[in-house]
Amino acid sequence: MSARQLPAVSVLAVAAVGLLLGATVDWQPGAVVLGLALLLAAGLRLTLPARQAGWLVVRTRGLDAAVLLLLGFSLVLLATTIPEG
Image (cartoon, rainbow, N blue to C red; front, side, top):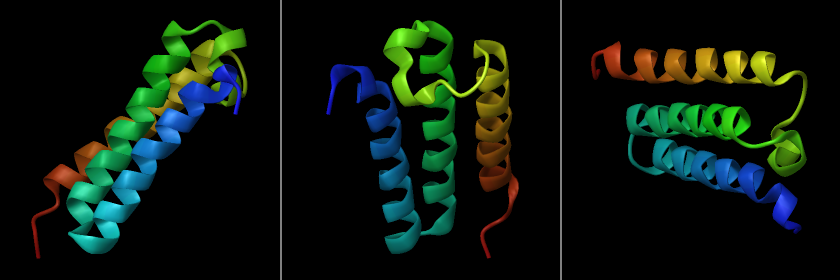
């Protein structure tokens, strides 16, 4: 693994923790952590230059960040507003 892929690998590690939480504890904390992983990806995509962002670069910086922010905030909002059943 090169240092260029470290941001994407860190996002994947946080997402893996979210999936593990969702599978073992409860879906809500797992979904929140997954949303936070998306928000982390958006923050890294906004702050890092394209050469250092590695696999996080898909399209333009603005489009990548907008999609990741929208998905991250939506997932966190959904997970926190649905009552526990």
